[in-house]
Structure formats: C-alpha cells, structure tokens
Length: 405
Image 1 (cartoon, helix red, strand yellow):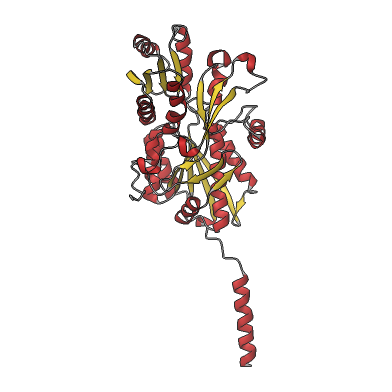
Image 2 (spheres, helix red, strand yellow):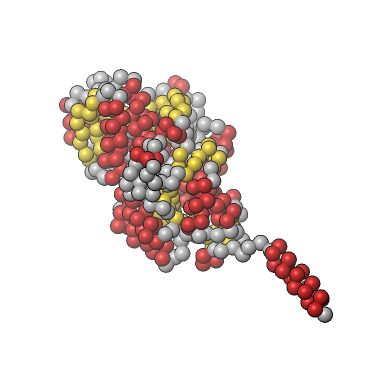
C-alpha cells in the first residue's frame, strides 16, 4: 500500500510539473491605453490612426494573450500635461491599465512618464520627441519608441549644415519639444562649423506666423529651422511661401515633418524638403503590406512613423507578456531590455538601459511633383543612418539609470 501511495504521489507530482505555469495577469485581463491627440494639431500624425494601429496589433493576437482577453481604452490628451497626468493616474489606479501608449506632445508625455514611474507601470512614449525623456528625466518604466530631437538634429540638421546652410534662425514651438529640438539642432549646427544667429518662440497651435516669419527674414540667416510639428509646421511652410521666404534666397529646414504633413502641403510646396524618419510606408514589402491594411481602415491614408510606432510598440509588449505569461511591469521591462528585436517595420532594434529604443533611421527628400508616380509617393531616400550614429550615446544623456563607469 505504501508503494502504491508513493507511486501515486510521484505520478501526481509529475503531472503538476508538466502543467504550464498559470498566467499571472493582473485583473484577469491585459489592458492597453492609447492616450494621444485625437482632436488638435497633432491628430493627423497620431490620433485616430494610433488607435487603429493598436487595434491591428491586438487583432493579430486574436484578442487574447497568455489565455486572457486584451482590452483597449482610449482618450484625448489634448496635449495638456494636467489632463495627461489625471487620465494616466486613473487608468493605472482605477481602470487597471497595464501599459499606456502615447501621449501627445512632449510636455504631456513627460507628465505621463512621471505617473508611470510613481505607479511602476509601463509607458511607451510613442508620440513625443524630447530627448530629455531618456536623458535627465528617464525612469525605469518608460520606453521612448520611435525618434527624438537628437535624431532629428543628427539627420536633417546635420544634412542641411553639410550642404552649406551655415547660419540658422529658429522658429520654435514654445514648450518642451520645441526647446529640446532647438537645443539639439543648435549643438549639431555649431559642431559642424555653423552658427545660430537668433530664434523666436511661437505659441503652440497658432494660426498666424506673420510676425515670426518677418523676424526670420530680417535675420538674413541662410536657414530657417522649423522647430515645431504637425499643424504648426504646415502653417509655417504655407506662410513662408506667402512671404516669399524661399524665393528670397533663404532655405526652410522642416526639422520634424511627417508624410501626412507633406500630403496636406502638396508636393508643389513641400518639394525639396529634407526630413528624417524612422519609417516610410513605401520603404519595403513589410511596410507596404502594413500600410495597405492600415489604409483600408483609414480612408486611404498612409501611416506616419508614429502610427507605425503605436502598432509595433503594442505588438512588442504583447509578445513579452506572451513569452513571460505575466504582465508584471518589472519582468516585462527586463525582458524587453535584454532581448533584441527584429521588427519588419523598423528593422533590428535594441532597448537600452535608459529606455531609448535604437534602430536605423532615414534621411529622405520630398519629391518634385514630376517625380511622384502616384498617391502618397512622396519621398526619395538620401541616406540610411545607423541607429548608433543617429541616437545620442547612452552615457551622454544624464539618465540616472545609467551606471557610471
């Protein structure tokens, strides 16, 4: 009888050992939150398209991961830091959101990352550009996903200076993103033998650039650097044309330009602009396939690099949850930082200790109307910039997570 009991216990033990570990999913659901600009000047580059991109990633998992349902919540951040902090706090504490993706401009995203750090929950900074996110403000729960102001400086800024644009005047959006972009591009300009002769800061989402454009013209700078984005960049370029800035011999440098901006401007106004992007819908077979699926849901619009970033960030997060069988933020983040990624849309990538995702980026030039072969055929590739060249070295950002050697 003792032998029988021992044998039974052994079989039982072997059966238990053979069972997969139960999924450790908080709240019995994996919940993603898309908090982005749904209605203001950045809504065309993220907005509803960001929500669609995350939905596409969820659908590729069949709506389930680690045996649990995946849910999506969304909200409009309105590019306001107080709204970002309030919603992200409620999502983490009350609604059980495991990871937030977003969250609009740099100021609102910095507010969200602070909440994520306090709550020890995942935040994917997909929208913002400020390099401070993985610099002096970095925390252990934030990943900066697509690009940043250092990349724009090392791409577009560097290319314009090396092409002969030595004197610069900046039109700068007056908040965290614009300040960081002007700072990082100025550093590249001076490092390459150029000089900054002046700058003017404009309110976010303004419709009248006339006084700012007159100051830029009066500076006699060779290059007017547009340290703004979205609707502000579009309006800047349109009003520069009205004032005859380019015809007068000055060059515009759109430091953060998206394919939807070019679409709004038309090739007639945008042709010749050089820009730095981490993704272009027509770059390879994988990007074209993704863009086709995206466009079918977005009335033919092609995805921006940010919208592609929402898709890949959501997918990468869900892959880690599946591999680990848990949504524990510390375990998920540790695996993300120790496991290199090879994404079809962004290529090979690593996530560094400071939270910076590093991948190749591309310097493009906007085609002339005669060069375009069809709708949304807007870019020609000038140069591929390796990730280690494009992004700031980790030990130069001032991130407190980075150990000093």
